[in-house]
Amino acid sequence: MKIIPRLLFAPLIAGFLWLTPAVSFADSNFVEPITENLRQDGFDVVNIKRTWLGRILIVSRKAGALREIFINRRTGEILRDKTFPHQTGSQMPGASGMGAS
Image (cartoon, rainbow, N blue to C red; front, top):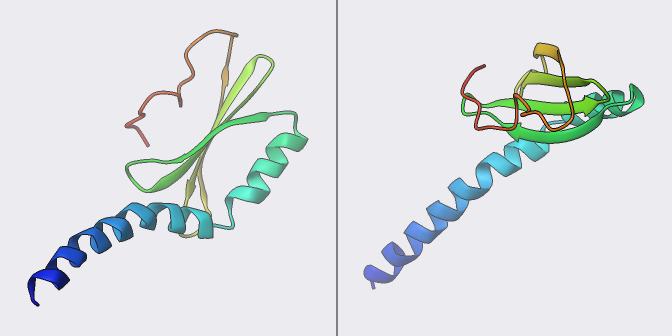
């Protein structure tokens, strides 16, 4: 009888850990207004992800410009908003694994 709960415990914990980042990211009400403002400014949102430091990174681009916005996912504070010159076909700064922030 004790083996069955132990067998169920590991997948339950694994599932919880797998879903936790997605749930906390989805609960953030900070991303939607920022992405909407980017779209109104003519940017296409390329990528939204969580960094290894737990920040939200929004990467967007429009003709000749690439923009990275880092947000504190708990407070909604914009930690960094930087625009880079961008040429078609060049590597995007936010496209790799990104360790900085």
